[in-house]
Structure formats: C-alpha cells, structure tokens
Length: 376
Image (tube, rainbow, N blue to C red):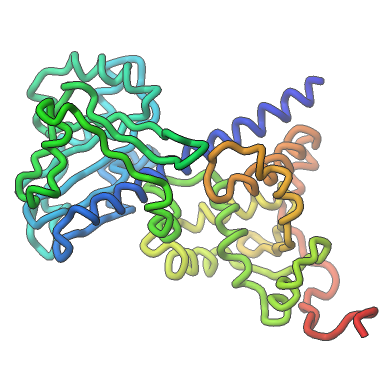
C-alpha cells in the first residue's frame, strides 16, 4: 500500500509540474496572438526567450516574454504562478524589474520611450499578490510601472479560453497611448471601462504554441521528452523506418542513435527557433527516457532510442486527463512508467538505467521496406 501511495504521489507531482509549465507556454502563445492583432504590424516584435534580467544564473529566468508594439512602446511581461507569503520576498522577486535598461529592449537601435511591466498572476495567487501590492509605496509601483493582471482558464469543458483582468485598482494601468485608439488596452481595463477583461480562446493561439513550445525557463524533463517523442524523433528515423512507422504497428520498435549536441542543435534550428535549448536539458531528458525504458545510454553523449507507436497505450488517458496540453496523455503514460521504476527499483538498479553501456549486437538498422514473412 505504501508503494502504491508513493507511486500515485510521484505521478501526480510529475503531471502537476508538466501542467504548470504548459500553462506558462499557453500564456505566452496567447499574448503573442493577442498583441500581434492589436500592434502596428511593421513595428511588432515579440520575444519568447528574452535575455534574462535575474542576477543569479540558477534562478528562474525573468521576464517570461517581451513585446515591442510600436517603436515608442514596449511591454515586459512575467507570469507569476507562485506568490510568496512574505511580502519582503515578493518585493525582492519583483526587484529585478527596477533595473531594466531600455537599451536591452531596443529594436533596430531604437529604444522605447515607454516600458510597462505586466505581471500575469494566477487567480489562486491573486489575493495574496493584491495584499502585497497594496502595501507597496506608490514609487515602487510606478518605477517600474507595474500592471498586475489576474488570469484564469474558463469554460474548460466547452470552449476553453484564458481570461485576464485587472486586479481592481491595485497597481497601474497600461501607458499605451502610442497605439491606435482601437488597439489600446488601457481604456477597457480602466475603471471607466468597467474593468473589462481580455479573453483569448485556446484555439486562437495553437500555431504560436506549436512553434514556441517552451517558455523562458528550463522545462521539466517530462515536458521536453513528450515534445521530442511526438515532434522530433520521427525525423530521426531513416527512410525505411519511416515507412514501417506508417503501418502503426504498436509492437514494432524502431531504434536509432542520437548525439546530445547534434540533437540540441536540431531543436534550436528546426523545431524551436531561438529556443536556447541547452545540451544539459537534452541530456537530462534522454536520461529521463532511460528510466522510462524507451532509451539506453551508450556513452556520456550518445543514446539509443527505442521508438514505437504508443497510440493504443495513450488512448487509456485520453478521457481521463483534464485539460493539460497537447501531450498530456503521453505525459501521463511516461510519468507512470518513470514513477514505477522510481518506486520499485532499488538505488543500484535505478542508477544502472542511466549508466553508459556499450551497445550489444548488430545496431545496423534493418531495411523495413522489404516484405516480412507472411506478407506474400
């Protein structure tokens, strides 16, 4: 029973981390769509992976994204999913925004005249954030100009959308006067505009999420593993393997080797443009798949992937997982396999799964285009 409880807790924690990260990616994709619709097209520049302003290298990278809407106006935004109960700690969390240099936000050498700091705060954390912000002096709120918005996911079972609303009159409003009248956010979010909301349906930003993929911090290994399995590994197969894959045989395993550095380069060049994916992230993710037992570590930098069609196994989670992202069913499957080994294996056996081992047998990929016995 204890082992079962450990297993369930492990899976719940892994999926919670997956969902938390996926939510941030949702938010960034949603705002890219929304802001691109209201910006001056020629001047619009949206950065998924802006240079971090945090001082500590190990700290979570902030801001989450930046957007230049006109040459004069720039938005720096940070998604806040956890608000410290201690007001001093929360204030310290926001302190890096007071040192932003407009030169770092320049587009084609032009520095913005106005920079607003938009805090996108999860609804369950909004009350604590509101109390903290109310205790700040006006100088801190206005320099930088902090615009706190509360967000939540609504209509999850029908037409899911993210709703953003100003947190009463706490903090400041957008100073977006350089935008055309119809594009300004400040009127709708002012008290005169009855503090209206911004609502962005999930279906509106699918294409942005497909190319953005990650947000401006390291993803959980489970998250990157799901992306690579669904979006990257098929392209690693040779021609005959791809033909075999199309048959959809769940019992057919197709093996290939990948090098950490070359896979990292591919991710940043072809799959997540300007994503700044590090080789350490890729290595940790492949080690994660070793514990899932869908990969084997051959050397410190080389892995063999056992790639197969998991459609039938994923189907078990299709109707179970509440809104959790495109790969949520695969995430539950991988989390289950990973946690099963984490709980059941002793430390030595678990360590052995991620230790380099020389490949055995003939690793030359067979020609799957040739008919197999019984196909004549």
